[in-house]
Length: 221
Ligand code: AMP
Image (cartoon, rainbow, N blue to C red; front, side, top):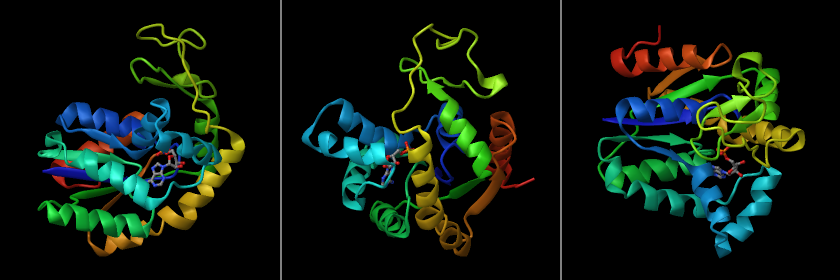
């Protein structure tokens, strides 16, 4: 069973890595950011409340996110494992997740901590663009990650879009929130013997190789 969570600052690549791992191991990639954005796109009552908060870069209330996640984890496709991207974000959520999994006889197997320097994180966020059709991710500020044609997807030529919360002000709030609320989870999971740390400032290929080595051999080298 591969039940995986990430602890990582914004732009460390948890979305990209989750997508790759989900394809390789045929287990679902569950992003709480996507679950929340989905509510906004569907213009549900909840979505309308969420839109402003997410734009600010602050965390959404634990109960709302937990409710959405609980429903998603109930889905049959999580039987062989799952990859959580963006959850837990604080100690309350980590404990709630332990309880939730315990009730269904599951547990977390791997906690992947992606370390990233703040300046690299900022560049990745401010240049980030993605394809709304196939999900491919690009970066207009990083040479090797630019799309072949400026502003359009290499795979299906769809016009690329930016997340509205990928701006400097929101980045700084999100990074602070990570340091204050999410980073303390590293100690929580170290005590449980679940943490594997990876330098995610090198390249996505390097990060992916390291993660696969950890998942397959239990090795961090
Ligand atoms: P992400 O896509 O993970 O970068 O999340 C985007 C935004 O969604 C965050 O800045 C938060 O406002 C919200 N969000 C995502 N996951 C959580 C979570 N586990 N708890 C609270 N808010 C979250």
